[in-house]
Image (cartoon, rainbow, N blue to C red; front, side, top):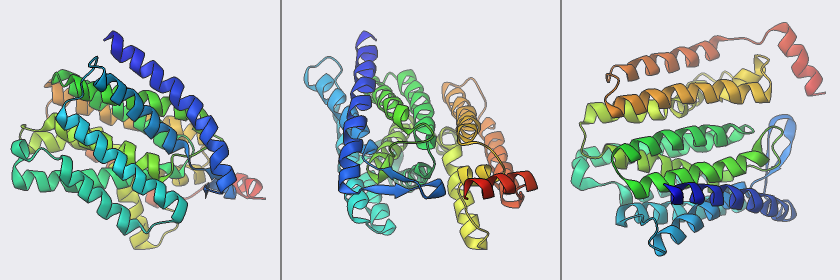
Length: 327
């Protein structure tokens, strides 16, 4: 326990310092993203998260203080390789299908087929890809990916701790701490973003860790827990898909809420609270303190929110504020 606290503290401080240093490098190299109101945000924050998480986890493993185990070590390696692909995408703008393919290969390498079976393993790979790509989509808004990532990491870590998967629990706590350090620079107005490097790494580690904790459980109960843990990410993916299909404008949760008049900080609070509710249900179902049907309520709530945002129109006051902000 003491090592877990020390490791998390180290990861938080290391990520905070590295993010500040790498932000300058990203600006000099021109590795930036365009955000709301066409602001330019440097993208090397994800590199800081990856470095802080991997360095602290590897030191704990090599010193024998907190062994990760072969499965968790392989997960970390696969996540690091995927982060390298994401970094290349940040610098050279790789097509989305290449990132999806890379994520699928990485997921196929870490799924515990001995516990899931071939069919279950295939579904697990598909789910990991969906969550990873969906988490990457959250990085479009200041502070959102970091906040959701911290909440989800704590939930998945609680599930891992309940299964006495100490190495996995430590890795998730370190990731949560690293994301918190990054969030200090990413809180609106963001001075740095995760980029594909950090968002793919974080989303992949979170999804893969959740699959590992549910390996050996029934398919139905596992689906309920995994969905609840990542319900907000699923809502983001669904809203984007429906928006693109209907051609009804911007499709991200944060953008829709901004157009309804919420401030950037308000968006994080609302969506962070939504993510927390889903994660809490997922943890309670995993522990057996709540029936699996609890996940159905989470799914119903997510669907209602998505449909409501699709139909909602900005008020006259909100449109006026948007015109003022956009000049």
